[in-house]
Image (cartoon, rainbow, N blue to C red; front, side):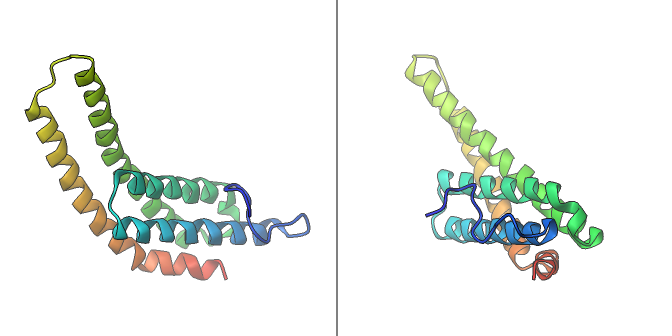
Length: 150
């Protein structure tokens, strides 16, 4: 079994761009798997796993930009960046809710109205994110980028 940072098939004899394609392929497959799992079970943790997968794709892309067609690459990169930022807004609300619960446990007064507003905003953002994720997995940007990996 490989560790999360290890890439199957990678070895010292592969050329840089061949290695980049292999790494990007696996990172992208992991992201798509995380998105599918999130749609099957919409939990805070599963959304966080999508966000982590987005980060791994994005930051790997930043390392390997020289290996790909710039135009297709940047179109896809901007979609990944947008999804990472958008999911970060929801994650911020999840962390805020956790922090507010901690304050409540320490006998600080936190009104139900605040929790309600946080929940409403989170739900609205979550619904929009689901739409964006659906658009992403069916996007031309994704299919064009995947073609660069073969």
